[in-house]
Length: 140
Image (cartoon, rainbow, N blue to C red):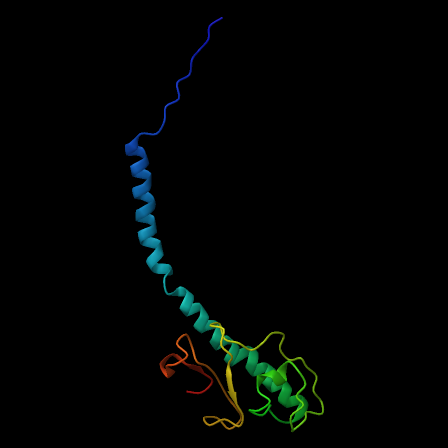
């Protein structure tokens, strides 16, 4: 019987370096395209909430009760029947399932009647809550 001794050949340093260089080159092309997409996605979610989800919930509340929640009642009136006057008679909520917070974890700002619109103003203070430059609003 013949026994064959198999030799295992490992990777050379050049082969390993070549793989590392290829991975680095691919990363250099992909990463810059993904950076900043997170903020764009958060802005899109906030716009969707303001112009779609919360706007629909507010309209349903208004259809059921004949008025929008007051500033004092706030958006919480969409989750829990408000006790503050005017008390809604036909509250059929909850109109939303989760707390109305923007993608940055801050509550949406709600005022009714609005300063910019006759029914209500609704906006997010954006990523930088201290600067009005990045606010996402339901007017303009």
